[in-house]
Image 1 (cartoon, rainbow, N blue to C red):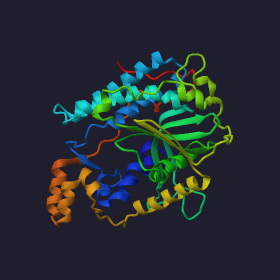
Image 2: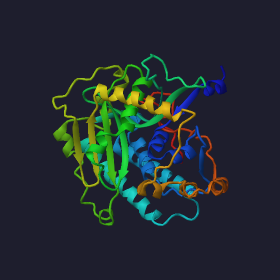
Image 3: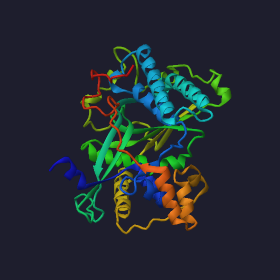
Image 4: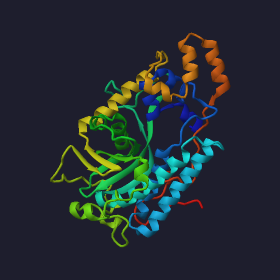
Amino acid sequence: MDRSQAAATVATLTPTERHLFKQCRRAWDLEAVGRRNLEPIVSSDPFDVDRCLRDALAVYYYPGMWDWTRSVVIPLVGQALERAIARESDRLGPELPRGFDARTAAARRLLEHYVEWAPTVERLAPVLVEVDFSADLPDPAGVDSALPMARGQHIRYQGRLDLLGLDEHDAYWVTRHRVVREWTPLDALVRDEETVAACWAWEQYYIGMEITGTIYNEMRLPTGAQLVADADRPPAGEARRERGGVPQHEGSGGGRSIPQHRRLYARSTEPVDSSRVVQDTAPLFRRTWIRRSRDEIVQAGGQLAAEAREMFNREVFVYPSPSESACRRCSFAAPCMALYEGRGAEAETILDSSYRSRPLEEVVEGRLGGVTWSTGRGAAPPRFAR
C-alpha cells in the first residue's frame, strides 16, 4: 500500500478541531481539514506571544542540553525567542499591529524572569520537547479495535506535547506551557480535557509508559510597572535547596541525576506527599501539578471516540453557537453573519473572495521534537539557524 492509499484509510482529528466542534460547529465546518479547510487570505491573528515563548522554552528544556551550563544554554534560549519574534513579524506583514513592540518587550522580559525563577522550583527532568503523537481511537462498542467509519476509514487522534518530563520518583508528567493575563481557575485546570486526552493518546502511542499527571506552566504577561521592576526575581537556587528536586543546567551533574534514557519502562514510586494538586506560585509564574487517575485517563479516550463518531458522521448537523467571547475572535465572523441573516449567496461570495484552502503544514527542518535521534544526554543537539 503506498502513502496515498494509506492516507485514504485514516481520518485525523486534532485538539484544535475538537475544540472548534464543541465551541461552534459552523466555525468547525469552515475550518477543519476534513470539512471545507478554509483560512482567511489576510490573517487577522494577533502577535502570538504564546507560540514565541513556547519555542524558547523548547530550547531551554531540550534534554540533550539539560546538563550544559547556564552560560551556554541561556543565550541559545534568547536566540530561539528572537527567531520566533522575527517569524511572527514576517507573518504579520510590513504594517505590524498596534502594540507589537510592547508585546515583544513583554515577552523578552518574561523570559528573562522565567530562566531565573524555574531553577528554584524545578522537580522535573525533560525527556522530550515539542514531540508529536498519534493514536487510533478505540471503538466505543467495546471491540478491541480502532473506531470504524462508514468509508472504511479509522480515526487517528494527533497532537503535540510541549514537554514530557520525569520526576525524582520515576513518574512521567505531561506539561503545557501557557501565556495568560490572569491565572486560570483551578477547577478549569482540573477539568482540562485536552491535556488529559493527550495523556491517554501518549500512552497508546508509546506502549508501556504510564502518565502520572499533568503540569500547567503558566506565565503571566507583565504589566508596564513590572517591565521595569526587577524586584520580582526570586533568588536563584533558594527554593530548590528547600525542596530537593532535579538540578538543571549544571555541568557534570545537571541532567545526569535522572538518566531518563534508561528508565522508559520504570515504575514510579509514590512520594510521601501524593496530593492531588500542588502549586508553585510567583508574581509572574504559576506551576500547577495535577495527578490524574487511571479511570480519568481511560475515560478521556472513550470520550474522544464518542465525539469523533459524531464529528465524522456524514449526517452531522452543522449550526452556529453564538457567544460574545467566541464570536469576537472568530475568523469567520463575516460569512457567519451573512448565513445567520439568511444571505447564503453573499456568504459564499465572501468565502470565495476573502478565504483560501489551508495549505498543508510545512515540515520545519530541525524542529525540536521532530527529530529521529535520541534526545537524552549525549544526543545530537538541534541545528540552530544563524
